[in-house]
Image 1 (cartoon, rainbow, N blue to C red):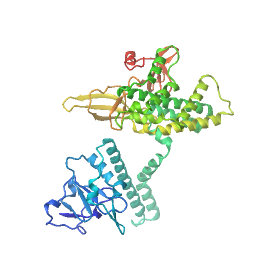
Image 2: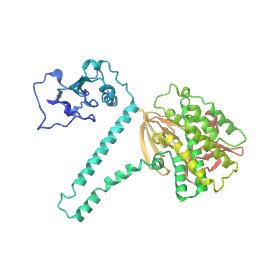
Image 3: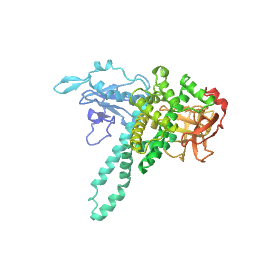
Length: 465
């Protein structure tokens, strides 16, 4: 069997492929030293951070020798949990256990006995796995680019031929780099990864400002701010109801919808977010529950001040207090800055997809549903239909759902509904509103409204009427 030394263990948790020229193979290794699939290898000698890797079937037969601790799980260990433990073993917390002289620091076996390994955490393990996958992919792309650059003069071609060859062969690599670079632009992230109702409003702001339309741009900023706060507040209300959390702020929404005056506005949306921002309301929730992230828009400080300023500007415009043309440029700049702050705080929305379920088929034997859905992320409603498997038969066809980091689906009806708008004939999202005493449904994307078409009794059951 192959003898594994510390040099075979990579910083990234990999174990080097066998090398017939340099590896040592022995057939007299006692059985107690044979490695098994699932064993964890930890470097005993530490330079910088410790090395750690998991032994797979493809690495066997093998035995660890030299400065390697072999850690064998006492019970079954999922690959996700193992990934989490390996990340911990490679951390500074474990590296700090190393002691020694003359730069030869070692982790003793007794030091390992006091370690408290992290418990299973699917969401964190998934996030680590995605990071590792992204790192491998980018490393592969980097190697391809380096190889292409180095092959310019190796084919015996003329300079013109080499130029054409490199341009053609490197097109995909260059496009990858350009696409990755776009992610550093907040506007690109919003346009491609934010929920459709918010992304569309923010895209309009970007378009208006780039064209120099000051008055329309100013109005677009205020409308986008309200759409952002309305969307997050309505989602928070739906999630709170799903988690059996009572929100006193929903009573204000109820009064607005039941009264004869206008419907909810920035004040009501902000009240919902502020209430869900309280730690007590979220106590006992799963750490991965989306309500924890929605609370990011509620804390006191800069975000609260930005919300207040935008609300004052929105109210001034609603009451006919128009800005003077001289003051408009500065007002637009300040309002845009406040909106940018809220959008930055709301970046978590890019990881909480909004989906529209188009069909559900339940398999009673497998105890899972096959779901067709549209992922409504980005500034356009025309998106392809995807499918997923989901272990529940309670998913509704035609409804909107929020997808949590743990891949759980959270129903948004009746706080948010969707249909083709009767006014502009475009697919839109709606919430209940009041106009001149009449109950209507109002679009988040463009503000169009008409009589409420959904079941009013459901609004009552959700404590919205």
